Length: 229
Image (cartoon, helix red, strand yellow):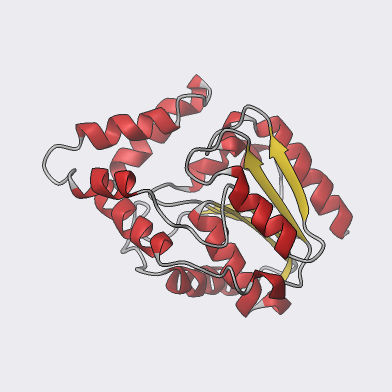
């Protein structure tokens, strides 16, 4: 099996730093524009790009793991191309990703002075260990507010609340108990409406739970992957 991980809005493959170190046969994707290339302007287009990425590398038995916007991409992939996946892991995401206008406004206002935007993003990473924290902030600056704005607008239009019951793949849903961006009720909806979905709320975890509580998250992924063998 191949674990393929997809990051969230304005983020990068570094979101899965500890998962890449733990799972030997894994790949974390940098979506286009993050920071190289031009970003896609919708979740559907990101799905097509990820599908092309997997196909070009001839990945088989893919377990697609998505965080936040990456979870939306994984969900849409599961709905459109279920035969190409072995299972889905959804971290800090939802069937609908209505974005807080505060985040959009910060990106829109960061055209000249991006200091307020950057401080807000640093706050998101405040519980991540020092060895990766500064690297994450540097990468966030490289990607920049305009790419994040593009992603947030794509997230804001995403809504498969009336379709998630059609997901027929083994699914594991995870969320930090203190996630301010995609609260627990988002993952509860996924767990209740995707047939047979496993569900785990991780105490003390925020939006980047896979970085903050990586040992717990890695344990969950490992158990789920084992159940698919």
